[in-house]
Amino acid sequence: MSNATDLVRQRGEHQAIWVVGDLYIFLATAAETDGAYALWLARIAPGGGPPLHVHANEDERFDVLTGDLSLWIGEEKTVLSAGCSAVAPRGTPHRFQNETGEIVEALIHVTPGGFERYLMAIGVPALDLDCTPPPPTPEQIARLEALAPEYGIEIL
Image (cartoon, rainbow, N blue to C red; front, top):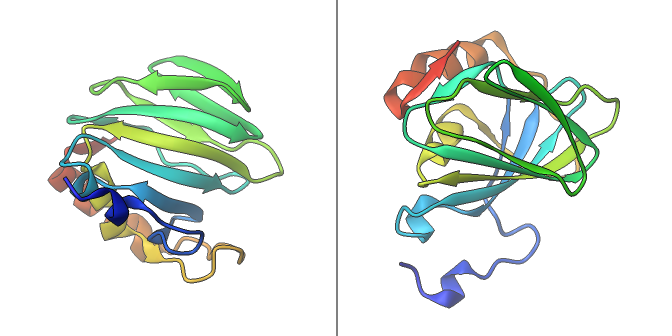
C-alpha cells in the first residue's frame, strides 16, 4: 500500500475525467489501496448516468451527497436523496440516472478496486472541474461498449 502521505490530496490534485458527460474525481484508486477498493466523487449532470450494466468483479456502493439520484438495482427503482446510500452487488444489473434539472453529487465506491481503470480508459481528462461537461460523442459511446468486456462489464 502507498504510504499515508501519498494519499493526501488537495482540491485540484485528484485525477478527474469526464465519462459521457459526468465528472468523476478519483479520491482513491486500486493502485493506492492495494486493490481493496476505489472511491470517486461523481458529479452527475441532468440526464446523466450510465446504461444498464453488470459488474462481474465488483460490488458498487452509492452515497448521495446532494440532489436526488434515481437508481435501478435489478427491476427495482429507488430515488436516493442526499444522505441516502445503496449497494448494487456484483452480478446484479443496475444503472443510475439524474432525472432532475440540477447536478447530483455522489460518492461511488467499488470493492474490490479496479473498475476505475475502465472509466479512465473510456473517459476524457477533466482539466477544469467547474466547466460545463462536453457532450458525449458517438466515438466515446462506441469505446464504452467495446472495452466493457475487457474489464468484466456487461452493457445490457
